[in-house]
Length: 342
Image (tube, rainbow, N blue to C red; front, side, top):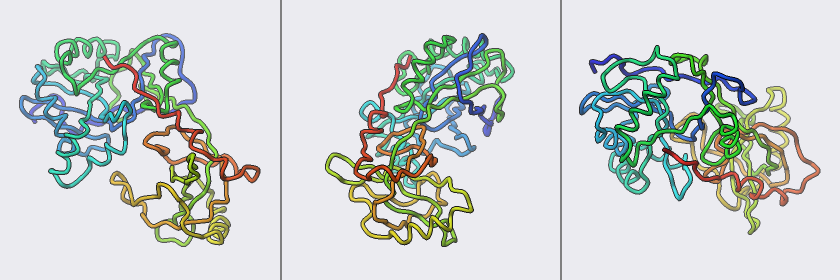
């Protein structure tokens, strides 16, 4: 592509902080639960790039079509790919798109179309790079771009933004449904490609008491790599909801001995662990069921699609709590609905 900006272009990164920053000079945005994506257009050529530099166009043909139908023939946008299923964003559906068969991808796109939520404009429709322009000016340019191009676009939406701390706190309270948390960006900073200097992210960390229903050995080892966590439903079925692997190296041998002694099928009586994720192929799909007797309290940042979105961290072992007390109602209410898009 003969362009001012060309793929791969490193997206701006965020530094994790514990609290929403306050004071003048900040813009707040929702942190969406999806795939980060840079979208490049040059006439009829559309290129979608993942955060890691991979091409995403073949997995999201519906977004390629949506972008090709915009009035602007030239631009570079930064945003998030999401898939809405019954009012909630589904990370599972995003992962299913990463399929080698084009026919399968087309079928998935027809059943559950994706949406591209745009939050930054890196190159204007006139072909001018905005990387060195402060966010305050880029946001104005983005809103003008949206007015001209996104009014009738169903699959491309403008992400809301505010300088109001009160509004940011309202979004933060909804984190755990379609939102991962809050992003705060310096209004007077240029686009910090590949750096964590211009924006921060805040996640709402919570805890839940879970039952250990199985474990996986570490790759190429006979020591535990992860514990598989479960929660009971109203019918007393134990559903797999995630994992924890944040162990000290010195504790792994004792944990291995403890859970090998508890090995007993079926482990999970509801939804069971599947194979490796399409997004990360290093983790083995083989797991060992255990008698569901051990309860552990873990921290998590996001619960969606009936499981923890990321790995959890152990807070403490709960010998004082019965496994059947560990139920889905601890986390089910976290699957919130989307906030309004412009």
